[in-house]
Amino acid sequence: MMTTSLICAALWLLAANVMAMIPSKDNLWQRAYLLIAVGIPLLGWVTYQNGPWIGLIALAAGMSVLRWPVVYLTRWAKQLVGRNG
Image (cartoon, rainbow, N blue to C red; front, top):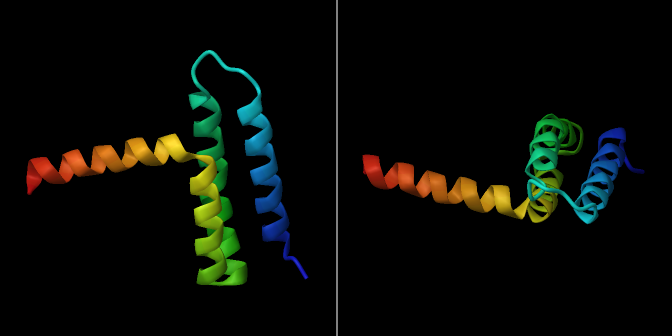
């Protein structure tokens, strides 16, 4: 049986894919910010209700949808560590 949090996560993934199909002037960044703002608490809820392994699967699914924000975050973190390290 799927929990409510997993159903919401599946709806989030569906909404993210539909949003990605609609053209945008800002390369979808505003939508990405909205998806991140909704997705982080949703990920916590999924992890709380279903455990850490399902939470990691949900995290991987979210990261596959939001590839470019993850790429830019990784580049920024590498630069930050390179300056301080």
